[in-house]
Image 1 (cartoon, rainbow, N blue to C red):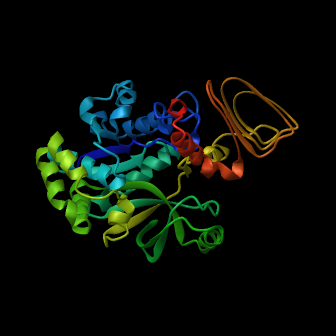
Image 2 (cartoon, helix red, strand yellow):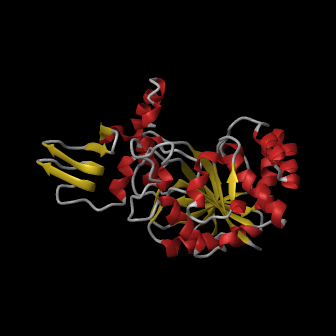
Image 3 (cartoon, rainbow, N blue to C red):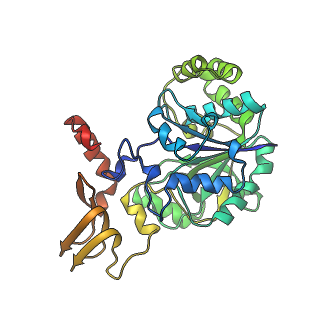
Length: 348
């Protein structure tokens, strides 16, 4: 059966402000050399899936970014509005069914760090036979710390095959105590947000568990024109594929993923993927630090100098500087909300 990749690439990445902006969202930032996270994701898929079978689901505002990468218009799926992952995945599935009848879809966000591409590809290929048997596959990453920023998957005690399990339950982001319990138990995996299944399998499950979308999903698959796509997006409320299908379906299995992974959700993520200097700083750009350590410093241009500071995030761009405690990395998005409230859109 033909294989397809679907890259979800419509987000903004507000926790990476001021580097991430409306016109330069997180997936196009370059933290790992001279290639953006999106390009690394795209090239990873291109190494084992034909380029014409790689679809990007995104927004009208980001269209030009993908054209700069010489991606065909036929492979850029523009959402009429953002309605969370269920709609984006359904749109891609309907496209594959409309054009090709069916196919195995591998779905991935555009901004994940994958530390071992060979093992990643081997793990994805492991899922093919289960997808062909109409299972819905999610990939669970082996936790390395009690992280409260991720959702978790509890695996059942019965192994279908080595590293392949029925899902016992999905668990939302836990508090620190629960996250430690999950880690110690060995029965929980991080929910990576990477999926694999047949296009027809996910469509049937969406119709089963979100029946209000069924008629419009059928219309979109049959016609795939602007009218049918807009009608589908207007047919229901925003919902993720996790809430809308994965937590409800009896056909879900999880494959244990051993490759190094991070969703690069905020500035602190860089501590896990970039080497630190002798003072335990993460530094990108030109920086002078005296008696300063354990900071994350990103300088777009110019130089930043500090004296006697620790555990800070310092980001300096041409028109904005942001300083926050590392422990507040998740809350940087509140600065974006406040800038919006004050109508300082020129900095967004």
